[in-house]
Length: 295
Image (tube, rainbow, N blue to C red):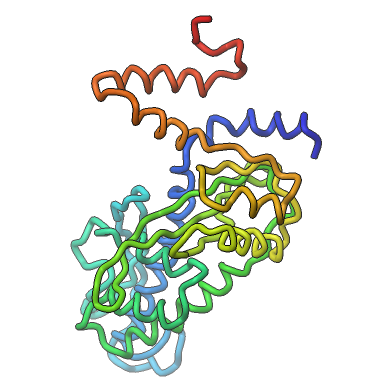
């Protein structure tokens, strides 16, 4: 892809890729699918047999379709399908009957998809989500259903070329050694040559060393990525050298959102709102000549 085509694509995408909320938007479907798998496992445990299994014949209770439920999360609203049983006895646990908010459940679930979480970590994570009242059988059922989906998602093939990738971190809480601690999941959002957004992967690490980012880049390459034209990032430690090692032709650009955040640290609160309004016009301008800056 030549530089003119790249500029054209960047121009077309600029209105959609102004901020890294796109990462959260893309993660909503992953959260929704996982919640629904967990609810299916809960129904399996409730009835005592899996869907379509002949063991369910003449048991006195069976599945009875699905109900729709809208959950408010930090990622935005998400509509999920909740399985029902004919006797009306099924009581969901991960999302309770009258629960309308996620209570930070989304980040804890998405963390399970990050490279760096072992199978034991995922099982402990699920046990922490469900609490001490959850049976060992339920946790085992959910783990068996989630692990293949996690492995498939982590290793799925990627496109050969991504014109733009964005990097960001998502903070979540996890229980470790009896204490609740903050962890950061690093996400890579790619824009493919058709202009579609795609989460390329999630990684968890205690630090942002050069070796960590080299591992991330090498994993992308091993899954099929041959070139990245522009990498948008904040000033993450070690990432610059890592991207140069694995993708030496990639142009690196500091993320606009992080630049704005760094700039506003020096602005008083009363001046912040009008400044942000002016900056919005600047970053939405097609070219430098169209920016509303007095020369």
